[in-house]
Amino acid sequence: MFRLGTKLAFKPVGISRYLPVGISRYLPGIGAVRTLSEKKQDDPRGGAVSAGEDAISAKPVVKLKYQKAYSKVTMKEAEKRLGFRFRTFEQSAMSVEQMLEEAKPEASQGLGDAEVQSLKERIFLNIIDVISSEGYPIDSDEDFKEAKVNDLVIFTILPIVTAFRNSTKKNVWLEREKEIISVDHETGGFQEFVVIDWIGDFDHKFVFVVEAKKTSVGKAKRQCLLALKDMYEYNGGGVVYGFVTTGSEWQMVRLDKNGFAQTIAFYVVSQVMRTDKEKWMKDYSIIIDCVHTALKHGGMIAGEV
Image 1 (cartoon, rainbow, N blue to C red):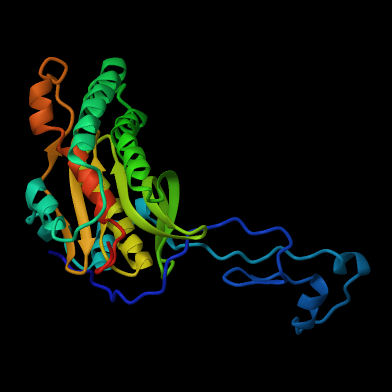
Image 2: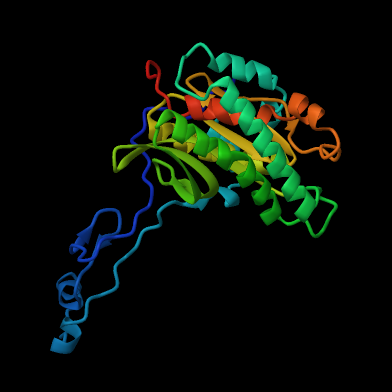
């Protein structure tokens, strides 16, 4: 396990929102909106200001929502922020089955076995449709763009989120291009796939995030870990999950009070899956179990069910 190198007792992060119409003269976190005559009072040089100029409000001084986007954080900066070296982190991984087993002691509402099996059948057909129309996700294919990786992701996780919400009545939603901002406003960015559990009309908890890259799981992982740290601190602890994927290769990551943990890489897409459904159901469909586990336990604080 890898513990964060920063204290966990943070104030909640904020999700950016549009400013309402009719803003006040002082905006917390943005600054005062002052007229030129007000600025004149602070100007030691003095000087006359015409009535026309006085009627014109100066532009507000807008502070950045965060200092650096996840995609711009260097490896050295990420290691300092997370509190460990990636080289050391990559030397430790558990089997997918172990991560799923470790989530079981905390009972939580979820889908039944028959529902999970039905999802596996459906998602198998979804993946077949994608690779039949867009091709197999492989980096050597110059025509296989990141948008196609996103297609594989959405056709894999969306049916699970929808079935989970309909069955459990939990208010979980998959949000695209969701902006996450750290509590200290140091890091942030838009994540393509974020699942959120809405509590009431205005409060929410982060459940899991998916970072998809065309090239390699390793390049996606840095951004995923940074986002997980900010999600965890926003939730006030508990557990959050992340997935990194190239479309075919996946890894599952968890962050809880014990720190970060990751699974070994596993595959969801096979070149022979169109002719060997039985093998896919046995060896590759575990992604459905992973996403289901993240939905059941992600965003939970100890003691919650």
